[in-house]
Image 1 (cartoon, rainbow over the protein chains, first blue to last red):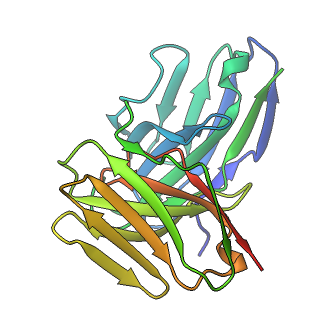
Image 2: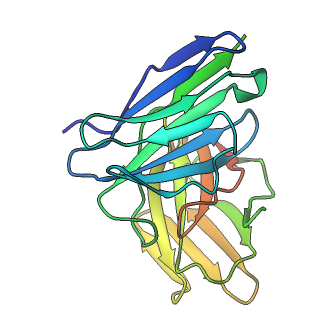
Length: 116
Length: 108
């Protein structure tokens, strides 16, 4: 029973390129969350998705960032025209039910994005 | 908007002793608070949670205490083991807000 799978583990992009980060949730989980951890900081919530729907994107930067969770396939976090400040670890988590409650989410191992 | 705060970035404890990690929050509307543990190059792992209607929850060596009047919670680890060395995050119940983390080192 595989956990949350994120790929790639490491991604290097030049300034101005696009970054695509993928997340496959645990089997049976239909809720996906993306977080970003900047150096020396805690995790920051970015977006919460269910299949084909964005439920809450209050943590997403207004420009260049987008996320989707299609009916088939993994969730994708897309960053267009990357800048050095986008360098961070991006974590995906999944759960069988929505936010709130006493049960934690299952996190993937993250994608470390480096913008050069 | 720091809804949960961890003011101690690091803590060192001798093996076998008690580790106490602290967290303050500002929003009293959360139904739960959670603690996660994170090793380097891995994602966070859920550890323990507490309901806002309780003041204590215990799971093995881990106990979380909630002081609603002070808007403060703490995680106690007894006895501490070297494998507990990790970064611990205090998290709001909707899991939108993570503290900045406390790096615990348990010295053998």
